[in-house]
Image (cartoon, rainbow, N blue to C red; front, side):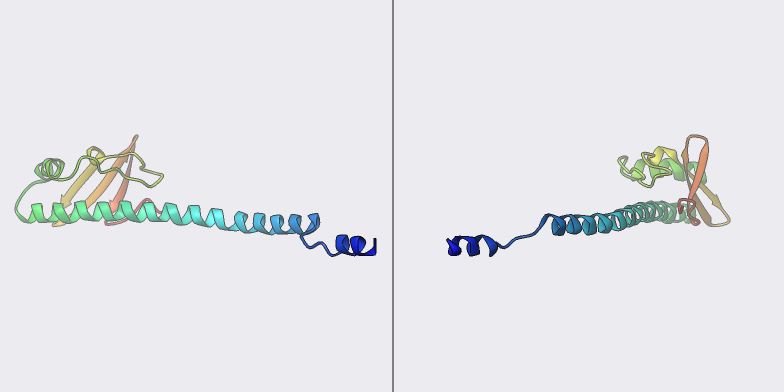
Length: 130
């Protein structure tokens, strides 16, 4: 009989309190980690949009050096770039190459993306940073 009682007392495992404490700690970690991840993800999208704008601008600079005007450059970019380019950052998400405005002045190129009635400059300055 004493052996049975001792066997029951020697059961190993976690108590309910210990499990609740572990869940609380995990909840706190999640509350800290998730917002940081979302911020990093949005910044990566902004950086990707800036890189796309930079690529468009560098290509436009090459065309400008060949003597093309801004209208011809925009037309040439429409022909040369893949049409499935989509911008990703929250301010201009879903916009495509059709929404890009290019300005060439004195050898410098400015790339803007229009969403609604607002133009967001993405190259050389980046208006997308929050």
